[in-house]
Image 1: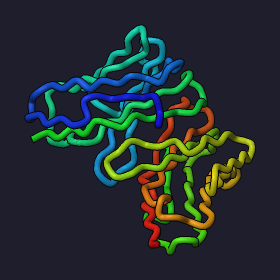
Image 2 (image 1 turned 135 degrees about the vertical axis):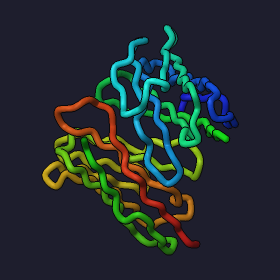
Image 3 (image 1 turned 45 degrees about the vertical axis):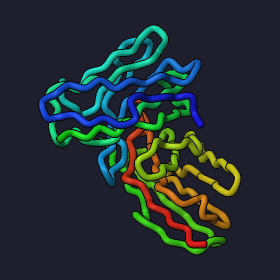
Length: 113
Length: 112
């Protein structure tokens, strides 16, 4: 079991609403990445934070935004929810932005109706 | 952009059998992660491989990185029902960021 935690576990939202997902990184890890995983697919990279700065972004629209706090925990915010945003959202942390072991949290299942 | 293909897409084996899952990249590999996932849950870290033909083992699982073939293989010896799940590889291409691109996964079922 890793030290990465995510909340909430499950969430149901209506199209057009906004949602905030939270992630606590493993102790000692300053780099947090967020992924979206649709059913039957591999995780798709959304963005990465290193020491409170975004230092990488995947092919996701600006309505996906994030934050990293001084304790290296992180938030993922999604505005104007669409039905296609329904997915498992995964957070991962590692020691630094280089090639280090990366550990995932249990995920947040978001359903948009 | 990097493309990653995992094969086979699914695998059904009898308990005790050996099996191999492959992960092939369209770009030269700098590093690669292997994870296991139960349906709807987070990814469980298995191992990370670095360039240089690295090979690692953990319990009955062995994985190797072959940069020339732009491929990694994960081998399970004497499979058990506890090995069942989805195996995902996440590849890091040379010359890029250290952010992995993931394959679609290989679904493994082990019959007792």
